[in-house]
Length: 110
Image (tube, one colour):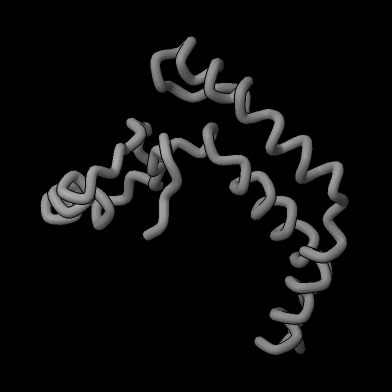
């Protein structure tokens, strides 16, 4: 793992990432960990991207769709996502964090 100065590691708070030996290992390396609510999709803009991709692919799937077809559809739909959509999701992170803090970690409008 290569972290620059003042880096803070953020993970998805999944149980394997929070196991005691992993925490101890990272602490011994001097890696600072960010506190992060477990399984909070409000803080993860990629969840909205997965939803958008899923909707786009679902309208294309038929009874004869193969796994190879599905893979190709996903690649095509991913490539078709406008950069403006990605930028909007990234810039929404500050608002998302503020909204989650305001409701003490509960669900938000995101």
